[in-house]
Image 1 (tube, rainbow, N blue to C red):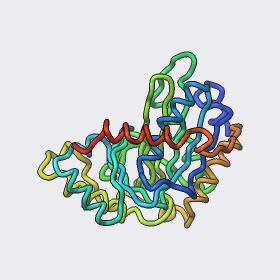
Image 2 (image 1 turned 60 degrees about the vertical axis):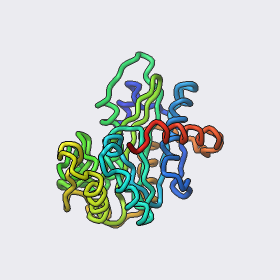
Image 3 (image 1 turned 45 degrees about the vertical axis):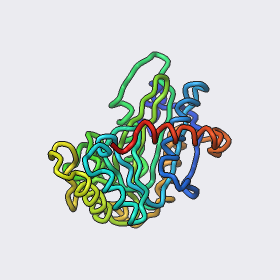
Image 4 (image 1 turned 120 degrees about the vertical axis):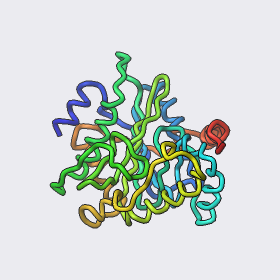
Length: 278
């Protein structure tokens, strides 16, 4: 675990994280985990403490801000809701991402370094190393770099054999930040890609092609398709175990002990007002 130790030594990764595991409990509002991350950023800055937030949601499409401004976004959201999916706008970067119980979402919420250094790519690199490290026992190359045709494409797409299974995003505040990952573990990549494609088909409504990603079949896959059958819980456990082997102490905590429900609800309301569907 030499690579993780180097992140600890240079101050990027604390040697202690408060761990909020919400893999088996979820709020019906898909904005809840993003509001909780906002509040954890406040706690990270005030307490100089790092947090690991691991969570799932049973069915949602999380849009980026640009997605929400597409001319047919409201109609596309209505289509998703008719299929039983929530549809909300997040405050971190990236484009639309489908979520279900086969997708593990991971947030590292950290105070900014005391020396004031900003290293956007270094923070992405840390999360990439953690994702790859959690899969090291499969002896398969885990690559980074944009996968054209995937949903929510970006420079730090995480893939195996040219098919993306994970995407990364960041949310930066004045004194703290969150590095977020979605990891597709169970089920089929094709079905999720089809959902994203259906969303853009309606949401685009004549918009120019440079305003939304062109999602293609065959560019997304789950880890169960790429490596071996595994559950979302197994991957989450492997991720946590990697941190501990690398010298990071994980201190379990309940979300309610760190953030009053009224505080999170207030942030959710503010996010809905600030990031409406236009």
